[in-house]
Amino acid sequence: MVNRIKTYFLLGFLTVILIFIGGFFGKQGLITALIFAFLLNWFSYFFSDKIVLAMYRARELKESEEPYLHSIVAQLAQSAKIPKPKIYIINSATPNAFATGRSPNNAVIALTTGILQLLDENELKGVIGHELTHIKNRDILVATIAATIAGAITFLARMLQYLAFFGSMDRDDRRGGNIFSLAAILLFAILAPIAALIIQLAISRSREYLADEGGARISGNPLYLANALRKLAYGVSRYPMRNANPSTSSLFIVNPFSGQSILNLFSTHPPIEERIKRLERMYV
Image (cartoon, helix red, strand yellow):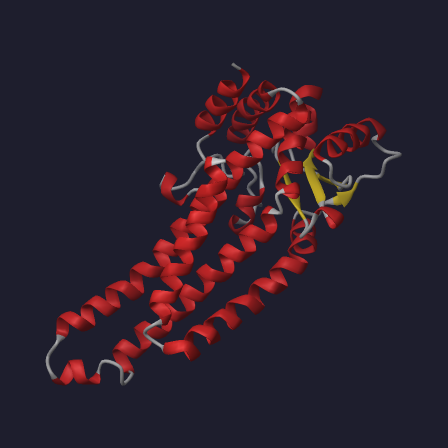
């Protein structure tokens, strides 16, 4: 519940930043930015699943190839009360997985060959439960909303910087020598997109905690996922996904770059150790 409230709060805070920066341009500028960002993310929302699966050369795994894996996914999907998603396989030694698709009715779970080799049945159930929770919670939709608002903020901020230098909005300030007002506008224009990015990443981390919690319940034991995360962290550190696209890193259950973020502040995933602790506390 705490992480769900946190997500709503962060989305609301993004909206406040958007409205505030939009005030520099009036209603017309705000609407223009929202439309521009919406169109970009609408395309991403409807076609990102096909794009990312093609990016990693994933292929659909037929039930006749791995009936046991399909049976596990079907059983857990029934527990989650959502339709059974399609299963795709990525030929990679990096142990990882992700879910994609804009709704439970057209969802996909992608698993690497590495994760199938590394995890036992119970650990795999924990991972699949985590991904099913992402699907059930429509996290792709939440991420798209956050990206739309953050994109609009960035668009407006760039316009604000341009106008501050070349436009008419600061002409009177320049004539009056009010350099402090100009500096404040430029500083806000620079910091607003950074704040939007940090909030967007915080939303992603909150959704990961929610998916961990849901995955623990769907699989029937929080230690299944805790043990899986411990193995995955080690596996990714040994076999990082060198051909991974940074823009897709938030999709994976663990960071495919082995946690090589410059700062945790800019990481799409919560620390593995903290995720494991929370799951272990659920078991007690």
